[in-house]
Image (cartoon, rainbow, N blue to C red; front, side, top):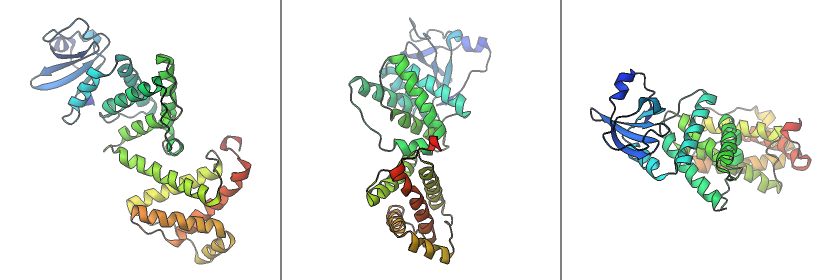
Length: 300
């Protein structure tokens, strides 16, 4: 359902005939067997099948792809108009900020998600996203847009969304930027990094200050490690003498890193070399002072 802005003449647009009314702001036309979904404020108000389309009210025109056309039409007919409008506003804002087009499925996935999120908020049911911190660090630009979207929704609908909703929106945006959208892949990366953080916290019995610079360095390092594992690339190499020194000097951190490496090997069906364990141990050791200090990244 790629967004296809209309570039033809006004005369040609006038010839478009309504095939189906989805709601006051959305219609379906059918020209030479090809369906188009057209959206615009009040474009279908007081209209019915076979009426001409008012070209001055056309804001967006989609040529729906086979796999999601019916889903999108269902969304448009069953979702409150204010949610549909907000979803499109967020998508347009995000495309402008990120300077990139999204996969067409975002119009289905984000709209459906926002309808669910707003309904839960109005029922005062809070569903926490335990991966929110990892998503914030992984997909920074999308997360910032998510924060804007949460504030925008609260302003427009007077509904208080949980803070983690910014992460949920960010994940939808990031996924829609990919050539082959796969929410499972994006979630897997965030889940793995979240698990690694929790393993460190469990090992030392301390809570990590996730805004510290040392944790950010560890997070960035592990993100690259996971990317190299996924791409089948060689991991870090470390001199044997240095590796031995790390193992001897930072015993606890090294044992923690070994546990993490063992878990990764089982989860990803791969082998993590000892040299990489050494680098992980160094990062873990650097995190430890922040357990007590609570030094924040913003204060450095």
